[in-house]
Image (cartoon, rainbow, N blue to C red; front, side):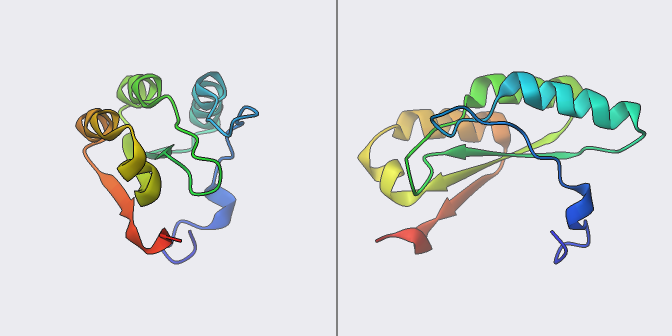
Length: 108
């Protein structure tokens, strides 16, 4: 994040469950807390098929939170999981997010 000029101090860590999926409740809670502290959250990075365990965040629910607070939703997609399954789900994710990160360099 330093490369983007945002700084690591401005990152907000959101809890995940045992499957590596983002906690939507914690996301909402952390955004509210940031707003109370006069911070300006603007970006949420969700994942559709992590490279290590293949977990998928609940993109629909995360998109709802992002719409509620008018935040940019970015979805990272791991190519191996994209090819194996969920390609229709990925298209839906892109519809909600407006931006998709496809990580072709992570093929093993």
